[in-house]
Length: 236
Image 1 (cartoon, rainbow, N blue to C red):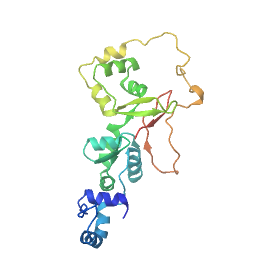
Image 2 (image 1 turned 90 degrees about the vertical axis):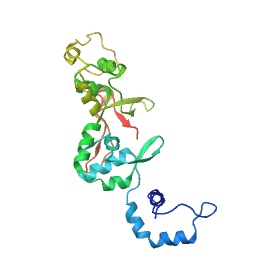
Image 3 (image 1 turned 120 degrees about the vertical axis):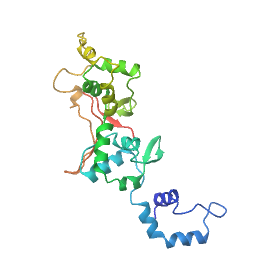
Image 4 (image 1 turned 30 degrees about the vertical axis):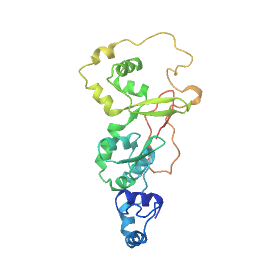
Protein backbone atom coordinates (compact mmCIF):
# COMPACT_ATOMS: atom_id res chain seq x y z
CA UNK A 1 0.00 0.00 0.00
CA UNK A 2 1.38 3.40 -0.97
CA UNK A 3 1.51 6.36 1.38
CA UNK A 4 -1.34 8.15 -0.41
CA UNK A 5 -3.49 4.99 -0.24
CA UNK A 6 -2.79 4.74 3.48
CA UNK A 7 -3.68 8.42 4.00
CA UNK A 8 -6.92 8.02 2.03
CA UNK A 9 -7.82 4.87 3.97
CA UNK A 10 -7.46 6.87 7.16
CA UNK A 11 -9.51 9.72 5.71
CA UNK A 12 -12.27 7.26 4.83
CA UNK A 13 -12.14 5.69 8.28
CA UNK A 14 -10.92 2.33 6.97
CA UNK A 15 -7.82 2.45 9.15
CA UNK A 16 -8.00 4.05 12.60
CA UNK A 17 -5.47 6.53 13.88
CA UNK A 18 -2.54 5.63 16.15
CA UNK A 19 -3.70 4.01 19.38
CA UNK A 20 -0.46 3.77 21.35
CA UNK A 21 2.10 6.29 22.55
CA UNK A 22 4.46 7.81 20.01
CA UNK A 23 1.91 7.96 17.18
CA UNK A 24 2.10 4.22 16.64
CA UNK A 25 -0.43 1.49 16.00
CA UNK A 26 -0.96 -1.50 18.22
CA UNK A 27 -0.43 -5.01 16.92
CA UNK A 28 -4.18 -5.61 17.09
CA UNK A 29 -4.95 -2.64 14.82
CA UNK A 30 -2.16 -3.63 12.44
CA UNK A 31 -3.35 -7.23 12.20
CA UNK A 32 -6.94 -6.14 11.62
CA UNK A 33 -5.90 -3.83 8.77
CA UNK A 34 -3.73 -6.56 7.29
CA UNK A 35 -6.65 -8.98 7.28
CA UNK A 36 -8.70 -6.41 5.32
CA UNK A 37 -5.93 -5.18 3.04
CA UNK A 38 -7.55 -6.28 -0.25
CA UNK A 39 -10.86 -4.65 0.65
CA UNK A 40 -9.06 -1.49 1.76
CA UNK A 41 -7.11 -1.27 -1.51
CA UNK A 42 -10.30 -1.67 -3.52
CA UNK A 43 -12.10 0.97 -1.47
CA UNK A 44 -9.38 3.63 -1.78
CA UNK A 45 -9.03 3.24 -5.56
CA UNK A 46 -6.01 3.41 -7.83
CA UNK A 47 -5.75 7.14 -8.57
CA UNK A 48 -4.02 9.52 -6.16
CA UNK A 49 -5.29 13.01 -5.44
CA UNK A 50 -4.20 15.32 -8.26
CA UNK A 51 -4.10 18.94 -9.35
CA UNK A 52 -6.36 20.51 -11.96
CA UNK A 53 -4.15 19.78 -14.97
CA UNK A 54 -3.85 16.07 -14.25
CA UNK A 55 -7.54 15.84 -13.36
CA UNK A 56 -8.52 17.39 -16.68
CA UNK A 57 -6.08 15.19 -18.62
CA UNK A 58 -7.60 12.14 -16.93
CA UNK A 59 -11.13 13.21 -17.90
CA UNK A 60 -10.08 13.98 -21.48
CA UNK A 61 -8.57 10.53 -21.88
CA UNK A 62 -11.36 8.71 -20.08
CA UNK A 63 -14.19 10.25 -22.09
CA UNK A 64 -12.19 10.78 -25.31
CA UNK A 65 -13.20 14.42 -25.49
CA UNK A 66 -11.75 17.90 -25.28
CA UNK A 67 -11.73 19.09 -21.67
CA UNK A 68 -11.06 22.79 -21.27
CA UNK A 69 -8.83 24.24 -18.60
CA UNK A 70 -11.10 25.26 -15.73
CA UNK A 71 -13.22 22.09 -15.89
CA UNK A 72 -11.91 20.64 -12.62
CA UNK A 73 -12.69 23.83 -10.73
CA UNK A 74 -16.14 23.95 -12.34
CA UNK A 75 -16.88 20.34 -11.37
CA UNK A 76 -15.89 21.16 -7.80
CA UNK A 77 -18.04 24.31 -7.89
CA UNK A 78 -21.01 22.15 -8.92
CA UNK A 79 -20.38 19.56 -6.21
CA UNK A 80 -19.25 16.80 -8.58
CA UNK A 81 -15.57 16.74 -7.57
CA UNK A 82 -14.17 16.92 -4.06
CA UNK A 83 -11.28 19.17 -3.06
CA UNK A 84 -9.27 17.28 -0.44
CA UNK A 85 -6.29 19.54 0.11
CA UNK A 86 -3.87 21.83 -1.61
CA UNK A 87 -0.35 21.84 -3.04
CA UNK A 88 1.58 25.12 -3.05
CA UNK A 89 -1.69 26.98 -2.67
CA UNK A 90 -3.51 25.18 -5.48
CA UNK A 91 -6.36 22.71 -4.91
CA UNK A 92 -5.90 18.96 -4.91
CA UNK A 93 -8.86 17.00 -6.27
CA UNK A 94 -9.94 13.61 -4.96
CA UNK A 95 -8.66 10.82 -7.19
CA UNK A 96 -11.36 8.47 -5.93
CA UNK A 97 -14.08 10.91 -6.97
CA UNK A 98 -12.45 11.21 -10.40
CA UNK A 99 -12.39 7.42 -10.76
CA UNK A 100 -16.08 7.22 -9.87
CA UNK A 101 -17.14 10.09 -12.14
CA UNK A 102 -18.91 8.32 -15.01
CA UNK A 103 -21.42 10.95 -16.17
CA UNK A 104 -20.07 12.36 -19.43
CA UNK A 105 -22.75 15.06 -19.57
CA UNK A 106 -21.59 16.49 -16.23
CA UNK A 107 -18.08 16.80 -17.63
CA UNK A 108 -19.33 18.34 -20.89
CA UNK A 109 -21.40 20.94 -19.05
CA UNK A 110 -18.57 21.76 -16.67
CA UNK A 111 -16.10 22.07 -19.54
CA UNK A 112 -18.40 24.45 -21.42
CA UNK A 113 -19.20 26.62 -18.39
CA UNK A 114 -15.76 26.55 -16.82
CA UNK A 115 -13.70 27.26 -19.95
CA UNK A 116 -11.22 30.04 -19.27
CA UNK A 117 -10.43 32.98 -21.56
CA UNK A 118 -7.74 35.61 -21.51
CA UNK A 119 -8.67 39.30 -21.48
CA UNK A 120 -8.66 39.89 -25.23
CA UNK A 121 -10.49 36.64 -25.99
CA UNK A 122 -13.12 37.46 -23.35
CA UNK A 123 -13.67 40.90 -24.88
CA UNK A 124 -13.98 39.38 -28.34
CA UNK A 125 -16.60 36.89 -27.13
CA UNK A 126 -18.61 39.75 -25.64
CA UNK A 127 -18.23 41.79 -28.83
CA UNK A 128 -16.65 44.73 -26.99
CA UNK A 129 -13.31 46.49 -26.65
CA UNK A 130 -10.81 45.38 -24.03
CA UNK A 131 -11.19 48.81 -22.39
CA UNK A 132 -14.93 48.12 -22.07
CA UNK A 133 -14.12 44.80 -20.40
CA UNK A 134 -12.01 46.72 -17.90
CA UNK A 135 -15.04 48.93 -17.18
CA UNK A 136 -17.11 45.82 -16.40
CA UNK A 137 -14.42 44.66 -13.98
CA UNK A 138 -14.19 48.03 -12.24
CA UNK A 139 -17.99 48.14 -11.94
CA UNK A 140 -17.97 44.78 -10.20
CA UNK A 141 -19.99 43.13 -12.98
CA UNK A 142 -17.20 40.73 -13.92
CA UNK A 143 -14.27 39.22 -12.07
CA UNK A 144 -11.55 36.81 -13.07
CA UNK A 145 -11.95 33.15 -12.10
CA UNK A 146 -8.32 32.01 -12.32
CA UNK A 147 -4.80 33.14 -13.16
CA UNK A 148 -2.02 31.92 -15.43
CA UNK A 149 1.65 32.63 -16.06
CA UNK A 150 2.68 34.39 -19.27
CA UNK A 151 5.11 32.46 -21.46
CA UNK A 152 6.82 35.76 -22.32
CA UNK A 153 7.53 36.61 -18.70
CA UNK A 154 7.00 33.99 -16.00
CA UNK A 155 6.60 36.74 -13.42
CA UNK A 156 3.56 38.20 -15.19
CA UNK A 157 0.20 36.95 -13.95
CA UNK A 158 -2.57 36.80 -16.57
CA UNK A 159 -6.20 37.02 -15.47
CA UNK A 160 -8.58 34.41 -16.90
CA UNK A 161 -12.34 34.80 -17.24
CA UNK A 162 -14.86 31.97 -16.98
CA UNK A 163 -17.29 31.30 -19.81
CA UNK A 164 -20.31 31.08 -17.48
CA UNK A 165 -19.46 34.51 -16.05
CA UNK A 166 -19.26 35.97 -19.56
CA UNK A 167 -22.63 34.42 -20.37
CA UNK A 168 -24.11 35.91 -17.20
CA UNK A 169 -22.82 39.38 -18.04
CA UNK A 170 -24.21 39.07 -21.57
CA UNK A 171 -27.69 38.53 -20.10
CA UNK A 172 -27.41 41.45 -17.68
CA UNK A 173 -30.09 44.14 -18.04
CA UNK A 174 -27.81 46.63 -16.32
CA UNK A 175 -25.77 47.02 -19.50
CA UNK A 176 -26.89 48.67 -22.74
CA UNK A 177 -25.00 46.28 -25.00
CA UNK A 178 -26.17 47.94 -28.22
CA UNK A 179 -24.69 51.25 -27.10
CA UNK A 180 -21.48 49.67 -25.87
CA UNK A 181 -20.90 47.75 -29.08
CA UNK A 182 -21.74 50.78 -31.21
CA UNK A 183 -19.03 52.89 -29.58
CA UNK A 184 -16.35 53.67 -32.21
CA UNK A 185 -12.96 52.15 -31.64
CA UNK A 186 -10.03 54.48 -31.08
CA UNK A 187 -8.13 55.22 -34.28
CA UNK A 188 -4.98 56.72 -32.75
CA UNK A 189 -1.41 55.72 -33.57
CA UNK A 190 -0.42 52.16 -32.75
CA UNK A 191 2.57 51.47 -30.55
CA UNK A 192 5.49 49.41 -31.77
CA UNK A 193 4.50 46.71 -29.27
CA UNK A 194 0.98 46.36 -30.62
CA UNK A 195 -0.12 43.11 -32.21
CA UNK A 196 -0.02 43.11 -36.05
CA UNK A 197 -3.26 44.07 -37.81
CA UNK A 198 -3.38 40.89 -39.85
CA UNK A 199 -1.35 37.75 -40.37
CA UNK A 200 1.62 36.64 -38.33
CA UNK A 201 2.62 37.39 -34.76
CA UNK A 202 5.50 39.29 -33.17
CA UNK A 203 8.78 37.40 -32.89
CA UNK A 204 7.48 34.51 -34.95
CA UNK A 205 4.81 33.44 -32.45
CA UNK A 206 1.76 31.94 -34.15
CA UNK A 207 -0.53 33.04 -31.30
CA UNK A 208 -1.59 29.57 -30.22
CA UNK A 209 -1.48 28.38 -26.65
CA UNK A 210 1.38 25.96 -26.31
CA UNK A 211 1.13 22.57 -24.70
CA UNK A 212 3.35 19.53 -24.40
CA UNK A 213 3.29 17.00 -27.21
CA UNK A 214 1.12 13.94 -26.66
CA UNK A 215 0.71 10.62 -28.51
CA UNK A 216 -1.28 10.83 -31.74
CA UNK A 217 -5.00 10.29 -31.29
CA UNK A 218 -4.93 10.98 -27.57
CA UNK A 219 -7.34 13.70 -26.38
CA UNK A 220 -5.95 16.54 -24.36
CA UNK A 221 -7.16 18.87 -21.70
CA UNK A 222 -7.60 22.15 -23.57
CA UNK A 223 -5.66 25.21 -22.32
CA UNK A 224 -7.22 28.64 -21.78
CA UNK A 225 -8.26 30.54 -24.92
CA UNK A 226 -5.03 32.13 -26.13
CA UNK A 227 -4.37 35.81 -26.62
CA UNK A 228 -3.28 37.08 -30.00
CA UNK A 229 -0.05 38.35 -28.47
CA UNK A 230 0.74 35.98 -25.67
CA UNK A 231 0.67 32.40 -24.54
CA UNK A 232 0.04 31.24 -21.02
CA UNK A 233 0.79 28.42 -18.64
CA UNK A 234 -2.15 27.75 -16.29
CA UNK A 235 -1.35 27.97 -12.59
CA UNK A 236 -2.48 24.70 -10.99
